[in-house]
Image (cartoon, rainbow over all chains, first blue to last red; front, side, top):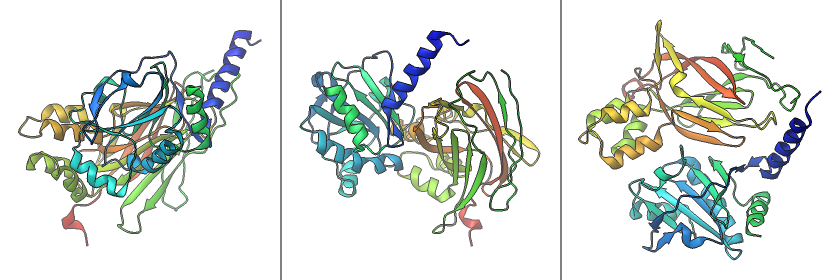
Length: 170
Length: 214
């Protein structure tokens, strides 16, 4: 007979899985309430953004480059998500890895992004995060811990994703 | 429970794509969420540029390899501070655009993990490893590649080891270190929920160099 705790584990696992799966896409819950590594980076306008300054808000952190096709593909949906959530204590910070302002400026003519585009020219910040490939995106809960992770592109304005993100805010 | 199986697969296109797959390990008793899915290799050809692709699926893993012309690789790396020798080394190393994905189609919710250091290519009676980015990066002096240029290889080439939860995928370059136009078989391996799998994708062809194009 299957032990009771094993059945409970299966039910709990299925519930967590269902909670993070939306419309065939999934955000992976990150267990353990791991604190997000802090950083201070300038955006393309020269404004400094420190992650810890956004404590109390949900922060979507996207690591990307202009030459990465799935990074390019997901930027429009991320921009739409940002337009929907911007007044709901949600922040989107897209950290470009290794490129300069001019390259990003040219890129944004074709892929408009209204959220801050941060510059990690030497790759020092990305090295502090458990990122292996681009794009990788983390959703940081208002308490500064990593709540969800997505490796590869997603459709960020998926209503299910928006609900998950709002769920962290409230 | 211990299981082991193998099978032979013929692709829809009529090309004989032989798939030899093995599973080892413990199946999670009682968890019948996973439905064994079909495996196979689908050939693709890009109508606009003629580049060929091999799209392999088995269980929850999908591995897509798309030919990359040496000139495409030259163009990518010439935009960064690499020496001419390094650019040629990369361009002639049989690069493929590679996408590895956990499709999650079985519904098991199990992670898929790959370790490219375990993959092997077979051609002309020889067996060799995949060209990994770590030894490449370590082999270059500052004159061969600037720090910024090395970042392009660091993030442009596929990670040697990576785990994918359902819906996760990564996109990057894999290189095989054999001349343009060479045909080879690629022995791939991965784990799904901790269970080891392996398969061989036959008849992959490195893109030809510009002098071989019609």
